[in-house]
Length: 430
Image (cartoon, rainbow, N blue to C red):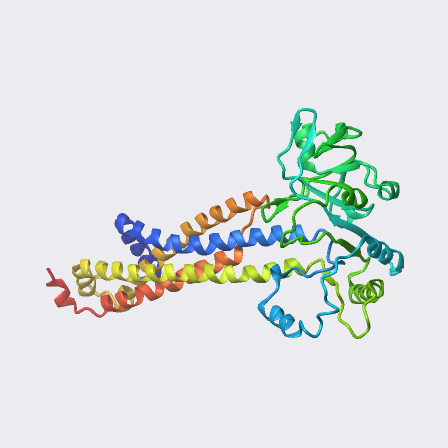
């Protein structure tokens, strides 16, 4: 028999056993759906994290007073504990003050943009007339470069200026979520209007374009005002693991990423001097590159990728066992057919390949349906994150490859059993 004839016969046999084929295809499809779906969702998460944390670009870094332990590895924590006694005096958790941040900005002469900011409270209520928000609005205090260095683009009006900063007057720039709520997404109509934040009147001088959201937090549900204004009105929040003590943050953006190490070195030297750290002591502040968090998040997501792979493989192993049993039943049911084929001159190879192709076809059908379901499930998650459509070419290839291997392994023994049958005994089988 020619290859075309063997394949045609295998397809007809698969079609003739619809119920049996459908059940096996469904088992395989769920395994591939888990593999492709979870990894499609992970790709969407990676895309969102990259967009969110790369707002400063690859050529920026941040200076803050205390390293956040949320993304730190066990080895780093262990090292800190071992060296805690030695660096106890120099690593005291002393917040960065306004004077220290401003002094650094004055003394840092490297060709770069420097922004000073401070986090305000989270649970704020913004109102305009009788309309008001839920107590979820974030207040951020910054300077004239805060919006630019944090990836915000103006939609209308202007950003903060030096007079706003120094005087600490009640002016603000609104995030896109608040513009939509109060002004029906007409940013120009918001300018010079008076809103109230926790009952305190503020004049709107600008509005921002949408920046999106990540990790369940909207970057547009925010009001930006000067850091002096935040110090006066919005530092009454209770301490939390992420913001235990009000402290200023310094952001630096350099023109060329190749100069990053040199810029960080000079920044550390200047800030050690500002913080009056002895030459023999460790720095009592931390410098983070802007891409550090996204790198650590992506490395943590790789663990989820491996978990998805294990789940998919376990499901496919079960599917392979089921497929092998079905193929063995099929061989038993078609014993007389096999004997007849051998009696009229059918070769062992043709019989072996027919059953092997049947197994592979069923397995690949499961891969196709599982891949479609996986893409739909994974991209439903990307819709929640508001990212673009993700098509996981790599995982589709691996899904098809794994299913082909599953089909070969599951059909190998049944096909060998069928090809080795004695034609006389096969014809006499009841």
